[in-house]
Amino acid sequence: MNAGTQREARGEFAHLATIGDCVKQFLKDHGKEGTHDKVMPWVLKATNLRTAIERAVDGAMENGKKFHFGTCVRNSSKIEWTQMLVSRRKFIERCKDFEEVYDWGASLAPWGIGDFSKYVTAQRIAAYLKIEPKEYVYLHAGPRKGYKALFGTNPKSFRVPKSIFPHEMRKLKPSKIEDMLCEFRETFPRIEWRA
Image 1 (cartoon, rainbow, N blue to C red):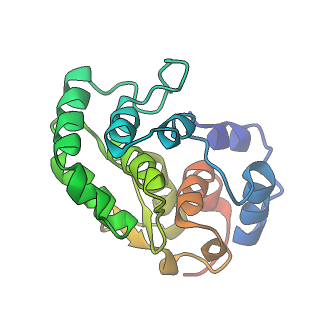
Image 2 (image 1 turned 90 degrees about the vertical axis):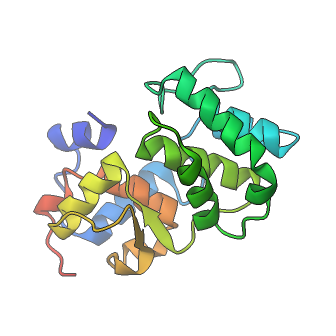
């Protein structure tokens, strides 16, 4: 159960009545910048793309401890994926946007690498390349549930345009919309708004 689900269950989000209220609460709790990914600082300290890829896939923090994101991924899948990504790093290095980075990573992912691992690894590698999602919001497990709660239907793709979201949410970066979808997935069903 994620933190947002727990907070909704405890009544901490009971005062939220609109999408705008949810955005204000989210910004109060998390701010507009930064990431909750504790591996990201270690990836960004890499001196070359090969090392950044290795750290991004491995999912360990600088102290060697595994961050809970992606800890259920088999090591053999991580090793295979790392080798595939490293062998194509010259192509990845030429990527112009996040979609290219994500698509390269996803296309090379072996069995055992799920949607969340594909996304968070692409986010880490892209950050090393100074690229971030701009036009699309990526829907893996939690954000997919949030999308369904917000729109009342399952998304037709793992990647949806930022422009489809309520105008209050479009003020946020796509990665923050993704975080917000996950956090407020139990709150959205009781919020009134029209698409």
